Structure formats: structure tokens, C-alpha cells
Length: 206
Image (tube, rainbow, N blue to C red):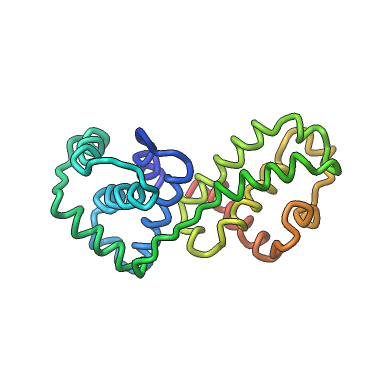
């Protein structure tokens, strides 16, 4: 899965679009047998469909050429991609409202910055915290967490993980309950469960 994710990081793929691609990918294989489909063909198709969902203009022929270069000139047929696209859309129930954790993550960082109860140590390192949090969210797509947890839960869990593992941990006074300062409606049990999954992904390099 790590190699597949690296292949998605091509030109014109930003964080949010990356999240949509991987959500489509995981959703498709939630319903389909992974052994019956070529992972790279599915990934390319998810990329093409995600760009349509996000109103990004890109030609399928161009995308195929990009993936060929990445995958040692692997043969990819336009007809195959078109058929897969219909299959993926059917798996999604033709519902293309796909949200990712990246948007709420930015919102939470803004709230975090404005909260004067938190240590200046964090406030003065927001850019680093943002980069670390986005890295954690990207790693979450190595497993289908997006199918089991809401984007806001993944975003908040990633922020919490970064905070408790940030510099000078001995000075840390940030707890689960402090998450309520950022999102008063958060389900702390869901955050705890999501954090356990994140720890497994990072610890075992899944």
C-alpha cells in the first residue's frame, strides 16, 4: 500500500485530492475482491474520477502516460479504465460527496491557535505541527480508516498524536479532555479507537 500511495503523489495532486483518491480506492475494495483487480488500474481510475469530482481538468490519456512512467511502462487500456470508473461509481452508490480529514484539520489548527489556554510552545510551532499532522493523515490511508472513522475524528486524532509526541513531552499537560476545547462535540471514544489504529499503522509500518 505504501508504494501505491507514493504513485498517487504526482503532478496536480494536492492533499485533499489525495484523500478523495484513497477514499475511492478503499471504498471500492471494501466491496470487491482485491485479487480480481489490478491495484494500479484501480488507483489510476480513482485518480481520474477524483479529479472529476473536484472539478480538476485532466485528460485520461495524459494520466495513463504518467502512470506508465511510474510503473515501468505498464500497459493500461482506456477501455479498461472507463469500465472500472463505472464500477467504482456504482460501489459509491453514485454519491460523490467525499470528505477528507485535511479540511477539518486546518479548521482545528485555527481553533487551536486562537485558544490562549494552550502552551506557547505549540502556538510558536504551528507550521511544524501542521506538517506532522498532515503526514499522519496521509499514513492513515495505508489502511481503510476512512471507512471506519469520520474525517473529523481522524483529523482530531492526528492532531492529538502530534501534540503528545511533540518536543519536550515532559512539559505536556494536554489530555483527551482538552480536545473538547477544539471540538466540543467530539466523541472521545471514537478518537481513542482511531488513535489505536494510527499507532498500529506507525508502529508496525503497515
